[in-house]
Length: 316
Image (cartoon, rainbow, N blue to C red; front, side, top):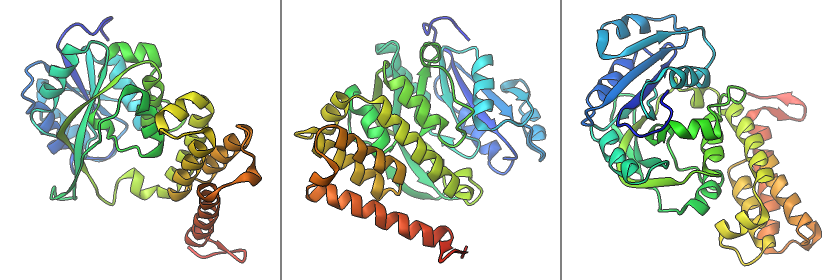
């Protein structure tokens, strides 16, 4: 990895495990980039299908590595360690780039040294059919972390990251495999500006074999713990400024309501605890505070039914 992001080579890292069904399309979209200085790195995370055979067909047009299975985060880190570019761009094996993805982001990156650049994105179905676009509202650097934990409209594959950001904030945490991307952006955003390109530049594929679909419950539980941890790292002033609320009681009530609505019970409790410690008092809940508390209790009860426990019996 280069010492400083001064060059123009971009490393597109594609982690894959048994993803031969879509891998060829992803590689083709990476090779089709209009930006002339791109290297494509495919990290095979111990696949048992014909992923390796597909990669070998591309010959020297890509850099192919095979490693023992360790999960997506470890595969991304493996690619980061071996990349030769001064910028990193992640492409999931089942997602796609528009041809101008790197070029549009590099135009912004070269004018703003050291920043992370991200864009809008769209969802497509298993066959590539358009499902909808995610247009992200402009947010200054102060509000990026707040929006990350309250909305998270960002797609990891839309990020263009300077190599210096990894030395400053670290790499993907393999100990939290389902939320390591959000965790990394959260850590980076503490000191590094994130700049938005308001264009749809990535296609995120939605299909039944995705980890986020197959492991929905585990993802919810890990995200709940993660968001609770994020609250512990954010100061009262950051939350107050980013949320735009008139006071801390209102700010933490908004957060509790937000987490409860998204079924993150522990994070909602953490927000209520912060509200209590701010001097509002748990028994001094106003309308928004009560709605937050009742809603997260209601959602939790629905989850207990949905995921399996009712009168002591597992029902799913």
